[in-house]
Image 1 (cartoon, rainbow, N blue to C red):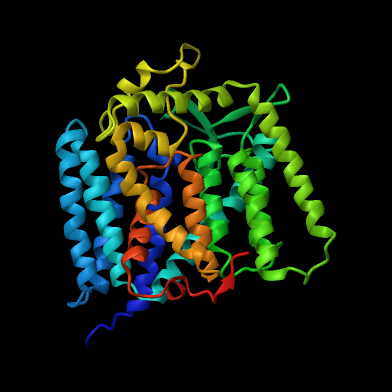
Image 2 (cartoon, rainbow, N blue to C red):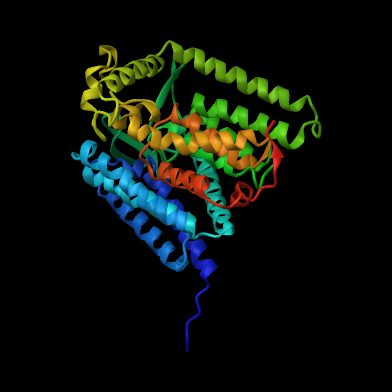
Length: 417
């Protein structure tokens, strides 16, 4: 008796596994454990899942422009591999020559409905992680009603021990607000801003299905973003709520409720920002741009070397020697990859953004996705993560695809502003 396979169910199952490994690899605690073989396990399984998805969805005819792009992509990356990535060649090959092309091929093979499903699974995954984090953050980290029961050693900002709860939530970062040191909600991630980054992407991708300004998704994501104490996340959350209000509702809701919420969020953000100006965190960000300018001036074309932080440290101010990590994806890419790698990142984002913005009636989810990527390029560090790779692959897919942007995400056209 022949066994029948339900292709759609298998696809959905593999997508859940894919999202699971993308989230784990993208700055989770599990990817930064000291003497970490788990991260290798995550990456190997991520590649295997991608290959399984390709085999499951493979068809003999792939559009010529996609094949041509892959060929040109490898030709473009070869000089950088030989010139600037020789010391970390294996890392570069895994990130840029395996993961990114595999992600791109998946988008080429996927139907529009498969892309919808993938986005939905990512949103739901971050939603569940948010609920878990809020529970442990309030009952454990803040109120101390639940004691920590695990301790792990991670290599992030130096080697340090991190406490947690059942491997579901970790107390991995603190911050200073009004001279008080408090824990940030970091969930399963190494720091609050990385959790906030995932929350922002989930917030954007949830717009298609959840248009209410204060539905359960926006409320849970909002509470979680606030608890991460990430200024980048809080300001973007304010922006996306305002954007949803302008695009979807305009005069359809009471005009008093939303301004009150916006004012509360804005005041909170200003307090956090003002407080950070007096801390080394703010000073370090300013120093990063000075460092980036000097390194780029010395190594303008191919940068100082992929994953090479030694040259960058030479230009850092003495006050921040305890924290030699850069705080912006743009600065890291510019210093390590020069104009060569920087343009590879920025070209699809900028061109797609301009095309979408110039069309006054366009796909608002796609427009917001491009806007968020540009925003986070200059405010977060996730430049070599699998999350960035799948986004870059999608950006290039959109750029060269014959399909209309409206078909990709599947949301009817709306005026941007």
